Length: 304
Image 1 (cartoon, rainbow, N blue to C red):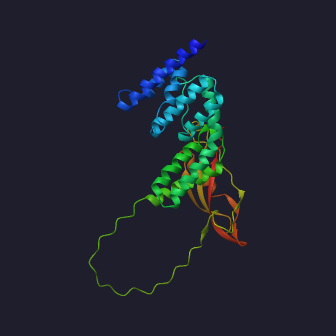
Image 2 (image 1 turned 90 degrees about the vertical axis):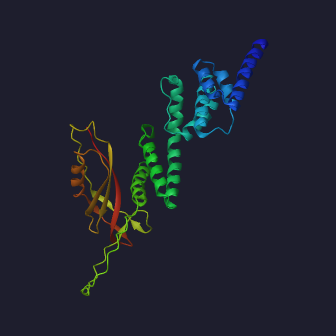
Image 3 (image 1 turned 180 degrees about the horizontal axis):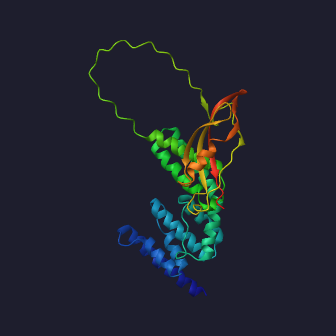
């Protein structure tokens, strides 16, 4: 038994040392060698090569290293160590899921369980990063980060969690996109003309302020009637399960403006907006006084 252990260790060291040397002189990528060893079910040797790789690997290589490290650890039955490696993979790339050709059902199940547990925390962290980019007026980066966050929140393994965060992220996508748009080109200067003095102007009445949920002291509106039409069976297979409307509710609780932020289906969207015109609310108030209010409404439709 002692002789067998010594032989196995010698084989691992002999393989790992050349792999590190090859990394320095650029003739062969040890990560490729580790993948080949994993594919040959030589998990101990693959793990030895991975453990010998430099800790300052670039992000793309580091993700692949942790993926194969977790696969090897699971194949060797070292579950707790594998969970840490899987967590590193999921944190770096939450959308990664090993395919049937890459891993056994048991390995894929372990990835799925760790991923399902970590997704809400990752989504919350990514929202904070996107909001920080928006607050520092880096609107292009903020829009990209909020769109990436929406993809994560729509992942089936989220299981409908963090719906409020989804609504906020959808709203910030539109705000960031509008803020990032280039300003209109200045008009060319025209030669001055002599004109008659303008008639006296009458000041236009001041438009009432539109409040939102983020502002202090606001009591949001309460729905009295908010019926959503059923999706016709002829288009249910092509329709989204959720949409997003932005509505402005006036001081009498009526919907006075509607903007479709996330479409469901071209044939269904006009029906939804027509229904939204008939929605009624107990109006929002500030210090007991009814006010106009802008509200984001996530619409979940019945496709049966």
